[in-house]
Length: 163
Image 1: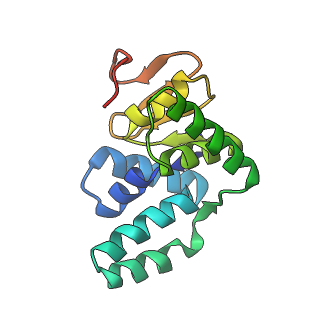
Image 2: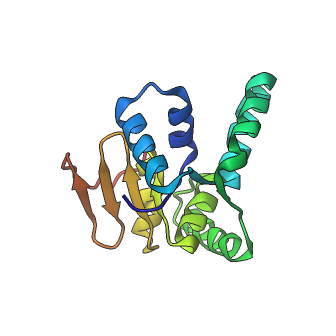
Image 3: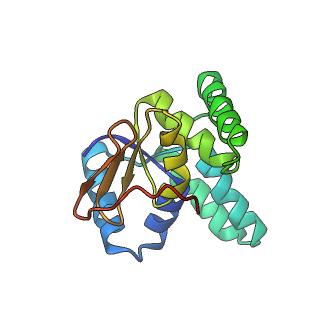
């Protein structure tokens, strides 16, 4: 198992504990590395969700639980890369919002795989030529943007349409 940046959807699913494949991969990751790795953008997204739903106890519990985790900031280098990714996606008419390009840029900048179930958005970044490796713990899949192939228990064809 390689060191990876967890996307917001994956960290959220770990917290819910409903998907056995994600739980097993998360347990293995924590045993290997001793912590989860995610970005300040993921913190923003989870806090926003709890605040919007007025779930302040869950918000406080989440903030207390992340003290021992590895959290990567959006530094100047990643911010520039996120701006380039966002600009490229906007130029070709395939925007994916602001959070996902920032998370992808942090993963690329740090040389980390990105663990996500939201492969459709991130594959748009790969198709622009950015060196982003995606891993989907739901199905134990890995997708390398440079090779264009899935590796894992399931075989999929790369979809050229956008969700």
